[in-house]
Image 1 (cartoon, rainbow, N blue to C red):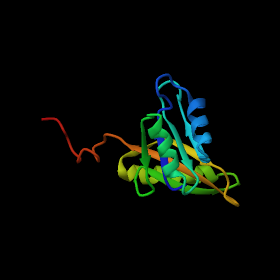
Image 2: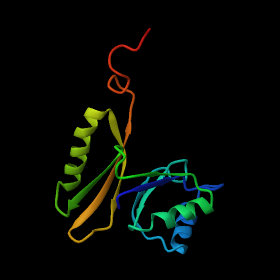
Image 3: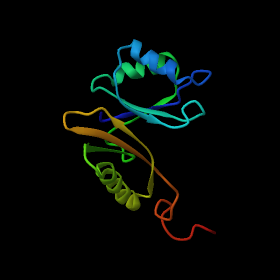
Image 4: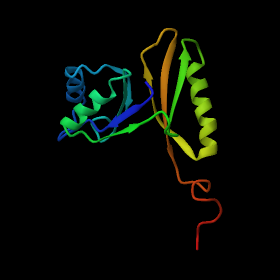
Length: 142
Protein backbone atom coordinates (compact mmCIF):
# COMPACT_ATOMS: atom_id res chain seq x y z
CA UNK A 1 0.00 0.00 0.00
CA UNK A 2 2.78 2.37 -0.91
CA UNK A 3 1.15 3.94 -3.92
CA UNK A 4 -2.27 5.34 -4.61
CA UNK A 5 -4.27 5.22 -7.82
CA UNK A 6 -6.73 8.05 -8.41
CA UNK A 7 -9.41 7.80 -11.11
CA UNK A 8 -12.70 9.29 -12.19
CA UNK A 9 -14.98 6.22 -12.12
CA UNK A 10 -16.50 6.80 -15.55
CA UNK A 11 -16.03 5.80 -19.12
CA UNK A 12 -19.20 7.49 -20.32
CA UNK A 13 -21.67 7.69 -17.45
CA UNK A 14 -20.20 7.65 -13.95
CA UNK A 15 -20.52 4.20 -12.40
CA UNK A 16 -18.45 3.22 -9.37
CA UNK A 17 -19.99 -0.24 -9.18
CA UNK A 18 -18.95 -1.03 -12.76
CA UNK A 19 -15.35 0.08 -12.14
CA UNK A 20 -15.09 -1.98 -8.96
CA UNK A 21 -16.63 -4.98 -10.73
CA UNK A 22 -14.05 -4.76 -13.51
CA UNK A 23 -11.21 -4.65 -10.99
CA UNK A 24 -12.71 -7.62 -9.10
CA UNK A 25 -13.09 -9.65 -12.32
CA UNK A 26 -9.37 -9.08 -12.96
CA UNK A 27 -8.54 -10.42 -9.50
CA UNK A 28 -7.39 -7.05 -8.15
CA UNK A 29 -7.78 -6.83 -4.36
CA UNK A 30 -8.39 -3.30 -3.14
CA UNK A 31 -6.70 -2.86 0.23
CA UNK A 32 -7.85 0.73 0.84
CA UNK A 33 -10.31 3.09 -0.80
CA UNK A 34 -11.92 6.45 -0.40
CA UNK A 35 -13.28 9.36 -2.33
CA UNK A 36 -15.99 11.93 -2.58
CA UNK A 37 -18.53 12.95 -5.19
CA UNK A 38 -17.66 9.70 -6.97
CA UNK A 39 -20.49 9.80 -9.48
CA UNK A 40 -20.56 13.62 -9.61
CA UNK A 41 -17.12 14.19 -11.14
CA UNK A 42 -14.99 13.30 -8.11
CA UNK A 43 -12.15 10.83 -7.83
CA UNK A 44 -11.96 7.35 -6.37
CA UNK A 45 -8.64 6.94 -4.59
CA UNK A 46 -7.54 3.40 -3.87
CA UNK A 47 -4.58 1.20 -3.08
CA UNK A 48 -4.17 -2.42 -4.08
CA UNK A 49 -2.22 -5.35 -2.67
CA UNK A 50 1.51 -5.06 -3.30
CA UNK A 51 2.29 -6.54 -6.69
CA UNK A 52 -1.20 -5.86 -8.10
CA UNK A 53 -0.56 -2.31 -9.25
CA UNK A 54 0.10 -3.27 -12.87
CA UNK A 55 -3.03 -5.43 -13.05
CA UNK A 56 -5.14 -2.53 -11.76
CA UNK A 57 -3.62 -0.14 -14.29
CA UNK A 58 -4.26 -2.62 -17.12
CA UNK A 59 -7.97 -2.63 -16.21
CA UNK A 60 -8.06 1.17 -16.17
CA UNK A 61 -6.25 1.31 -19.51
CA UNK A 62 -8.45 -1.35 -21.10
CA UNK A 63 -11.66 0.48 -20.22
CA UNK A 64 -10.16 3.95 -20.81
CA UNK A 65 -10.56 5.28 -17.28
CA UNK A 66 -8.50 8.44 -16.77
CA UNK A 67 -6.16 7.90 -13.84
CA UNK A 68 -2.94 8.94 -12.18
CA UNK A 69 -0.61 7.04 -9.91
CA UNK A 70 0.78 8.75 -6.83
CA UNK A 71 3.94 6.97 -5.67
CA UNK A 72 5.27 6.77 -2.14
CA UNK A 73 8.07 9.19 -3.07
CA UNK A 74 5.55 11.86 -4.12
CA UNK A 75 5.39 14.66 -1.50
CA UNK A 76 1.60 14.82 -1.84
CA UNK A 77 1.16 11.32 -0.35
CA UNK A 78 1.83 10.40 3.26
CA UNK A 79 1.36 6.90 4.65
CA UNK A 80 0.70 6.70 8.37
CA UNK A 81 0.19 3.57 10.45
CA UNK A 82 -2.40 3.67 13.23
CA UNK A 83 -3.12 1.28 16.03
CA UNK A 84 -6.70 0.74 17.14
CA UNK A 85 -6.94 3.22 20.00
CA UNK A 86 -8.38 6.69 20.54
CA UNK A 87 -6.50 9.58 19.00
CA UNK A 88 -4.56 7.65 16.37
CA UNK A 89 -6.23 9.22 13.32
CA UNK A 90 -5.76 12.62 14.93
CA UNK A 91 -2.06 11.86 15.40
CA UNK A 92 -1.67 11.00 11.72
CA UNK A 93 -3.54 14.09 10.56
CA UNK A 94 -1.66 16.36 12.99
CA UNK A 95 1.70 15.12 11.66
CA UNK A 96 0.66 15.79 8.07
CA UNK A 97 -0.91 19.16 8.92
CA UNK A 98 2.34 20.31 10.55
CA UNK A 99 4.40 19.25 7.53
CA UNK A 100 1.86 20.85 5.19
CA UNK A 101 2.28 24.24 6.89
CA UNK A 102 5.90 24.25 5.78
CA UNK A 103 5.25 23.05 2.23
CA UNK A 104 2.17 25.06 1.26
CA UNK A 105 -0.09 22.02 1.03
CA UNK A 106 -3.53 21.23 2.40
CA UNK A 107 -5.19 17.86 2.92
CA UNK A 108 -7.47 16.86 0.04
CA UNK A 109 -8.56 13.46 1.34
CA UNK A 110 -7.55 10.26 3.06
CA UNK A 111 -8.10 6.57 2.64
CA UNK A 112 -8.04 4.02 5.42
CA UNK A 113 -7.01 0.47 4.59
CA UNK A 114 -7.63 -2.97 5.94
CA UNK A 115 -5.67 -3.83 9.09
CA UNK A 116 -2.24 -5.39 8.73
CA UNK A 117 -1.80 -7.22 12.00
CA UNK A 118 -2.20 -4.67 14.80
CA UNK A 119 -1.73 -1.70 12.46
CA UNK A 120 -4.11 0.10 10.13
CA UNK A 121 -2.69 1.96 7.12
CA UNK A 122 -3.85 5.48 6.30
CA UNK A 123 -2.89 7.33 3.13
CA UNK A 124 -3.26 11.10 3.34
CA UNK A 125 -3.24 13.01 0.06
CA UNK A 126 -2.35 16.71 0.17
CA UNK A 127 -2.33 19.25 -2.63
CA UNK A 128 -0.22 22.32 -3.07
CA UNK A 129 -2.07 25.62 -2.80
CA UNK A 130 -1.14 29.08 -3.95
CA UNK A 131 0.46 30.86 -1.02
CA UNK A 132 3.27 33.38 -0.72
CA UNK A 133 5.51 30.35 -0.02
CA UNK A 134 4.58 28.54 -3.22
CA UNK A 135 4.70 31.71 -5.29
CA UNK A 136 8.20 32.62 -4.13
CA UNK A 137 7.17 34.95 -1.32
CA UNK A 138 6.41 38.61 -1.20
CA UNK A 139 4.07 40.75 -3.23
CA UNK A 140 3.27 39.35 -6.69
CA UNK A 141 1.56 42.50 -8.01
CA UNK A 142 3.40 44.49 -10.69
